Image (spheres, rainbow, N blue to C red):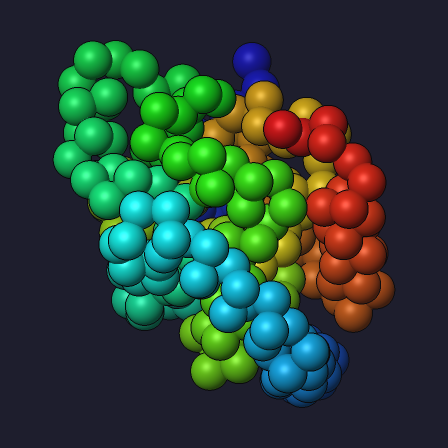
Length: 224
């Protein structure tokens, strides 16, 4: 029987290293700085409009700040435009207690999450809620491409093998996000894709994920 990503031993995973990998990381960070700074300059008007629209919806803080786990387990502040109701965290625990979590593994996911507001649904459909993460990329806590950064409570449930997701910086885009019907992918497969990316990292793979991710945001709704 084939082992799941959750069950595989940690020693089977060998992250990249060496001089060539160091050069790749230098190019990757240089691109992160250039791309995030340019995007902030060009899209600052859109970010401000989204913040205003969200504030007008319920008159609560439109910026959602949460703790996420980054490279090597380092905790950092993660920024998004809020897409849920103000009491979303309390509602999440109630939904978990009622057995409504549709995801396997430590993650929480519902197809029709009642916490998401009308404006939030539009922002998520267009990925506008992710724009503030450009500042995370600029300050070095995230990268344009990498595994999506998890919350601390999820990491507490990781196996040693799954913790290899934290061997690199979390990203705005990842290999999981460019899959067809990505929301139907289970947690083990999600981890497998993240670790596949970590082992195969290259400039060309990053560019593929960036361009395919942009295409899917604009044209492809199959992952919804």
